[in-house]
Image (cartoon, rainbow, N blue to C red; front, side, top):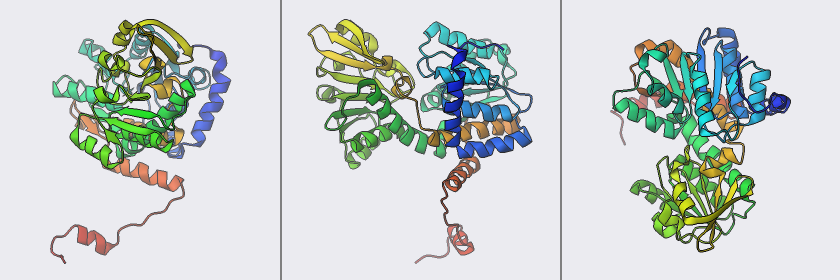
Length: 418
């Protein structure tokens, strides 16, 4: 079997960790049981460019049980868990191309290896896979019937592609599912980002000025968890509604140029470029910690930090110490890449259960409906979203009410008032 991983001998450890994740993903387990019987993906090749984590391992097993031939590469150079990659290759017989810490050339070599299989469906996280496809002649991938996209950054890129009329096949925006962004982005990113920062630094969060750049669902989650650990949270926003919301949530909103001089820990979660720039590094405190939890490291102007510095060294795992020319030190975590995956393990399985349920059901939906879809970005159908929420509640032993016939009638009429 063709694969490119760090060490196949890590498979035993990876298998145990995938099993642990699987025990915490009951919704995906139920989908897997149905997929084994119905084989909705039979005969199809799925190219998955995702973070190669334990939870992804569970998803790959479900797709394979549904009849798909699966090929996997990493969606970020630092997010691969090498033991998981080994288990996927050895235990599940999946062609996987991912090594933690791979350089940019290797990263794209792995993407190209997956695309060389001529997939029918793409499954992306950040849209690097789809972007690579669209930089090639259309005839090379004319057999692709559709795809799914996992994250905010990727959806933004794909919608821009669709707006220009250049998107070649339909995409399901998994990130836009309520059971994804309301939970994965908020609770998953919130917890795993703080986890990554603490693992990389072992610094006390309580009492710190904790600057969160971006107050979307990911930013809300990070701010919530930082506050819970006793930090004084400062929010940076360009959207007046989100800045107002952050203020009403009890946080202080201000421009980054003001926060730069008082912050102790900085996290970017915007999906945009150069949020923290050279002029901000210039006024940061000695000992400031800077990291990113958005999909790409472009949120930080690392080249500017390099120019301002006279020395650099890795003082801890995933923690680079930059000594500025005036002697101040700034600490960059995880090379500016996703800190929750670079230094920690990513989102907990309980929230990825819903996110990857959307991926699996999104792929099934694409197989059944691609002939009726235009080359555009579509939201996850409400019926799928609602079903996943119901399955998750059921797995947690939680019961809820249903509307009575009288209530349904009232909600669908206009006659009855006060």
